Image 1 (spheres, rainbow, N blue to C red):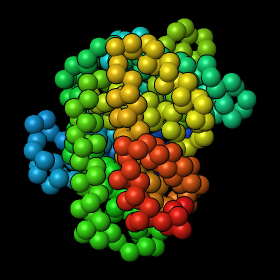
Image 2 (cartoon, rainbow, N blue to C red):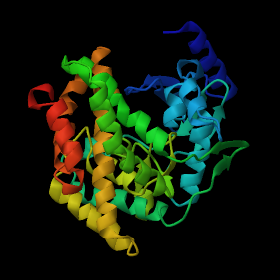
Image 3 (cartoon, rainbow, N blue to C red):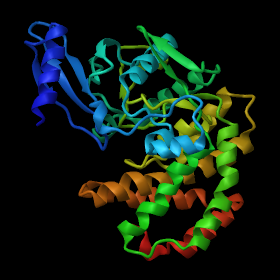
Length: 363
């Protein structure tokens, strides 16, 4: 426990009139962010979000060149928000303005990295399904949220409550930097030799058209971490508002496949091929002007890119840092990757993985 950070939180809670609230720590994730549920005497529960700014590398300034982004570090190169409170506040406002259930931000301090949020409860999709809730209505609701978000082009800048945040594009560099983390982290985790310069050159050549298509199609609002552990079911609300949204501060403009592939190829829980196909059909039926075959081709290619990112930066890196629980998710993610690579258009990438990461080097 950091005494200075605790003192900052205590001051913030006092300023918000919440110094008497009972504080209940909530389970965290792999980020530098943490949460507590606040129980004010005689009042409704609230959530304290704590994102110490000093724990993250700099964000991407609008207009920064690729070289400038690379010099600033991973967050800038990949266009991550570094947990910015301004990003959360403005994105939450944008989502609520579109009839969606993002938490109301009751109070915040951008410089301190602290915010008080509406408590949307504990009804995470993943938890409810594990306890027997039928998954189909939940996934239908989540897909319908995507349809609503994709019905219009988002603005370049989000503004709310006196703060603003640029909604940048998930561009070629961001896609490359994220996918390339597989090259860095998987050999270290699997105990295999680092990939040769020739293997890396082939990797770059095979991926280049995928990343270009990903940027070219970046036209819609993208949550960026849209899966069953970041979605809540709110049965007392109606329509798309029944889906509560969490952890959306890294939002970008991205290809419309991006959130769908996170949802339907969830690294943390099994999503059947049948459910995936049904939900893609639901989305495409609602977006009738979409080129189905082109959309699905981009979906599969970007899903391989995402699986490589998850296997590298998220799972292998976290496992090497001592978080062994991430190893349990690796076989599922490899299965998704292999399923996508059955697309004949991805034969080159399939061959690369077969040569460079044989079955015994996969978790």
